[in-house]
Length: 313
Image 1 (cartoon, rainbow, N blue to C red):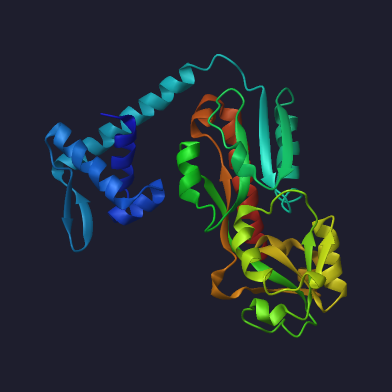
Image 2 (image 1 turned 120 degrees about the horizontal axis):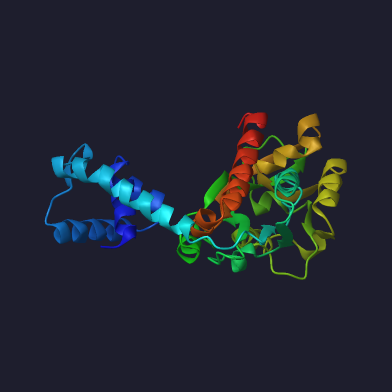
């Protein structure tokens, strides 16, 4: 029996359906069903009854559930006993356009509490390439996952699912005076006459932006593209010109002063083309080894939740 099988069993017992449990675990439903079946065969005992209402624990399942939780708890405790070295450093890789959001205050607070732990924060187009299960030098990766880079694939690489900070999408950032500002959605055809302000970079675009850019670029003339060195300059350009638009991630774009004052607005792209979740990938094994790392993860989560509460989203 594998410990992961017990974790599957616990998650399934605490869910309303196999499908819901599979989504929580970021595995395919047939894989979860097969693992459960093998577990039942191994212990020669049926753990769940299935009917039209979903699944429910059998009498044996009810008895085994607390014991399974205890075994997993013991295992996690054993991992902490193996801690021989204090946390030395944490590397944080965050998708560009997000560096001044969430992290600065969290990192400062962490540094004050743990002054001996080095934190290196790097902005890049592809934080996903730095996902790591390294326990001694753990890494955090924050980026938007979309159709081109689904959460499930990185969950397998990380060894556990990420924390989803925001469920959102890239929107068309517009001047409030733009003719498109009142639209419920926009298409590339709607934007043909306007100028598109994009960040200048020698790197490839973030993976979650690729479907959107592949949709836009063939329609928008290269003469209509404006390259800018920073997100702030793009926002300022859109704010002062009604025929310029940018690509901004919702709900994070609500932090822009122009959105708060009504000078800016945002409109979704048609066909849900910009959809993607802003995720925090981290190693749960590293967090079990280093409680201070878990604290850093928890503070990032709290910061994102506080932002959502502040904007009423």
